[in-house]
Image (cartoon, rainbow, N blue to C red; front, top):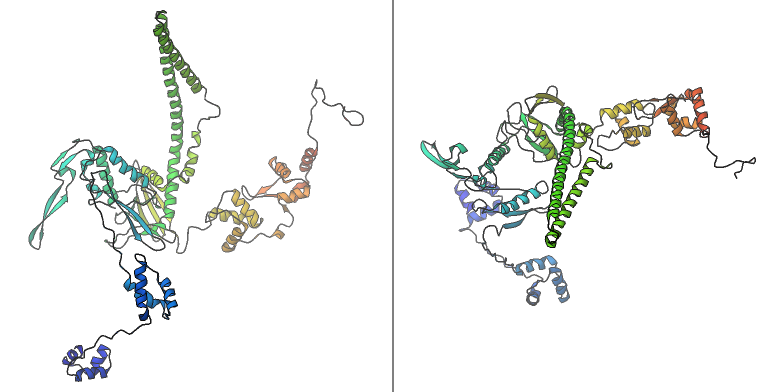
Length: 622
């Protein structure tokens, strides 16, 4: 039919064949035919499995409700004489396999608070499957729960926070959650708006109003889970977290970026977002929104976070010293207050003991029942007084093993506390937000520097300029301090000695590893630093071990001579190996010191002291 239509449009047979992708003979044969050809379905051919279908049906019926696997059926058919392949058998068995029916879903309803709809969902399959456990709380906004019931939900969220991924979705944004939880009754929270669309008035409803424009708002209407002040504070914080606007700061919620939600763009005023790139994800700050013009800037976050941390430690260190003194004073005041409380308790116990004694003395001795009870009360009061007296003596004379905390070194431990393994990123973010209000970032492309203007709490401002890494430069390069040590020691010491000195100084490689001779050698070759050559020393300078060998003493003796300033020695830098001139080993001072040290220990005779042994003429003891 399509050939005739194209022919009616004026196309030639060659054009029709080219357009339809068929030969011209087929086009001519269809045009000459009085009517379009009709094709019949080809009758199926007999397969090698045809003689065994009856046996297959019989075996399937015998195995029901179980199913026979295709390899097992193939072995049985081979024994019957089947010569075909397993693929043909699998296609036939697939057409005969019954479709399993799903179990019926039983749904039932319970009272609020007794049932929660839960589902276990697989979002992604394969090598790295992604599972999710979902819980649907559809009555939380309509049914009032008591404090204990809501405490269970909040405890669950608190336990899951920062341990597993938690995703909370609602039909309302968090900033529009009902003030019902704050003990308030509200009416008229939304209204309608009228706009002109295509010359006609168009009304839309459910537009959220601010608190001041609500029709009815009755605070303290009923007992709430939180008070109204906390509700307003939560609303402001939720609004700031939901939008990256100028002036809004997101709260510290963990992650790998220290300044997430705290950086602002100096060019457009928007908040910088955080993206993670690389095989081992690293944070990158960028001013970018998919629905706005192209990004203003972007820069890596590792150097920025480290620079802000150093600046924070520098600013806090003077205050830490003052805080340490205040903490020590507070500690002493606490001890004094505890002693004062124990003294008052002792006074009260002594008064009660005296009162019990007077009551016992005033009791009639013939009334044994009352006298026995008063005697027990007197004994109990005396025990309480004795216990308070022991506590007071213990408080006045603290145990020697329990030393008072040393607050003077608190300022020195700030950096160790910041980098402690137990300090989470969320804790660091909260510390930064406690001291910094906002940070405005800009990039100087000419100088290739990131300019950070820090707005501190209290109104102070400071500026940091951090160099942007060059193309291909990574953060695992060797530090300048380590390079300076290697350059100063390379001409006099071997790679093994340089590695030992770097490890003693606490300097690590760019990847945070300890130094070895191989790593020092690799850095020298990359930085073009000449290697150590023993021939360059010419015997003028000796190491500590070589000097000990020359003098025939141990390294400990040489170290003692250097410490006592008897033997001159030099160091390229602190913790580097000692260098000793060969001529200094033969001075009179060194010889006298060695002669004195080789003598026997000094034994002074004390008058009136009797000897333990009496030596005879033959050197024996009696």
